[in-house]
Amino acid sequence: MAFDYESLTETIAATAASHAPEVDRGVFPSQTLRALGDAGLLGLISATEVGGKGKGLAAAAFVVERLARECGSTAMVVCMHYSATVVLEHHGAAEVRRAIAAGAHLATLAFSEVGSRSQFWAPVSTASDAAGEVALTARKSWVTSARHADSYVWSSKPLAGGELSTLWFVPRTTPGVQVASAAFDGLGLRGNDSSPVAAEAARVPASARLGADGAGFGIMMGLVLPWFNVLSTAVSAGLMEAAVQKAAAHATGTGFQHSGSTVADLPTVRAYLARMRIATDQVKALLGDTIAAIATGRGDATLRVLESKAAAGEAATGVTDLAMRICGGAAFRKEVGVERIFRDARAALVMAPTTDVLYDFIGKAVCGLPLF
Image 1: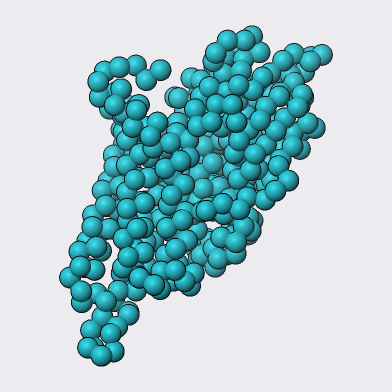
Image 2: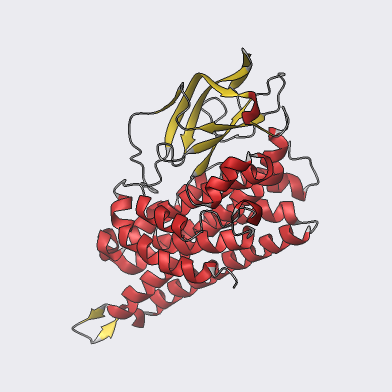
């Protein structure tokens, strides 16, 4: 019998929705993640040989998009988990892969650093030989699920030196790894436990290396970037879909007693809703085409990967702006649900690779220039 991840996701989306208000207050979505693990969805992309479901990017995007309609923070945690898991599937130890497949291990990425900001592909953190082990020293600026992930896929300069990077499997409990004490209290995505993480000569075994020394850049660009950009696009698409549905429900359900009409009877509001629907469907179409381009090895796949996150981030801010306008003063009340989506949608613009960085990359690609 085929694994029906779509029906399972629909069921768990209801759990995400019920916990979304508390997650927005900064509570990590542990109950939803536990449900995802029990249902086999944390192991969705893990290979069947280690007990996973063996699904690919399209299935992961479906799960993330559907969760984002209910809770952006939960969707982002899962986005990061899948983006880290795909690295571990290619380069990690079988024991960790089995734990992820069983839903007993949450992974995340630890790339962005204080010293290189959103240019995550250029770590300034170091790795050095230490009596048969490797000592990692770093100041990671933001790590999603920082206090709750079981492991980080961690970047550093190569052991051998140079300007490239090397990736490592770093358990959260590694001595010398320290998560910032202050809980995340940002504009949006408040429940994703995003926090700075530091390491001071944190020791891991040499076997913790993911891929060859100096191969991190290639893994980031060839594996992580496509997965993360696509799944980030899925987060934006889910938030946009939620904004359309909530704005339409408000417009059709809110009336003017003196005239007997509704907000939806205003032509300007219907035009706003039309613009929201079109923008949302355009992002979904680009998302689907990007996944297809990657799956078939199309020549424009890299361009689509770059375009998808940039387009989705911009579109999501526009769509949620319109949702706030349609709902008017009611939009400022949390029970309407629009202001949370409005806040969460803005993260895509500044989350590495930022929209401005992506525009530069896309422009280079259009001009036939090398990206780096």
